[in-house]
Length: 286
Image 1 (spheres, rainbow, N blue to C red):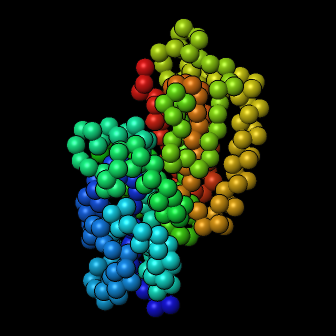
Image 2: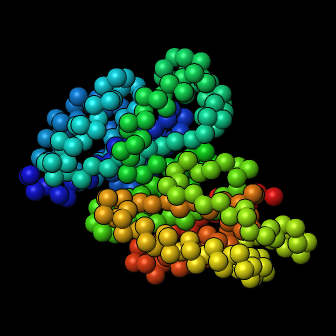
Image 3: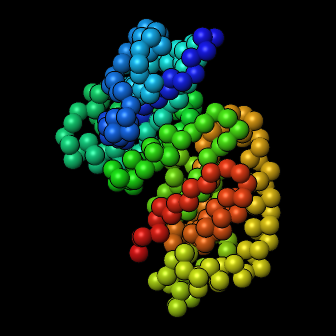
């Protein structure tokens, strides 16, 4: 090993239409030297140049345009990591419906040249090995550019030490499970504040809703067991090298029960020694 540990390389990959180009622009804004569509076959040579250059932070765009050679990326990444370069993979994903809508808006042709629905299916199949080794998957389905930039900003703080960043997100099942979730918990079994007239238009961030949800015997029993389960699992994820863990808490609409439980869990886990981020994906839906 060369001992070069101050070089950081992010490989930006993912589904066409999920925001890879925007992600690269974000990395550029954060001061990274960015190269789009670098052939995998040149990555070893690029590592040589990087070790001898003044650049310390680099982001490389690699996607389905690389063709079959993209399958060799995991092997190449292992080689450059053995040389002391800190290599991470960031994978951009989005729902099929969102990708189809974006291609329809831009009128761009999919790189695979197939009908859009068939192209997405085939692209997901080809990119699955890359997604499986990703340090972080970002679901851009419902994200604005500002939210994507914020998600990337958090990703840049990842470390390969014993520190692991936790992201706790509430969501509504009617809007789909977050694609980047590592652990998903369904809390639709809890009494629903939506059926209480005075609470219906409020959210789980309101003291009234929180009081209703947290006062339920079922909630207290659930949280005792769930908190114990999660805190017991965290050391195992750290030991396996997990640097970013997303826990998704879902209820029907993502406004009441899941928001309250997410808020409680985030506050509790902040005492675990890990950085904790709290998000409420669907709280603004009516």
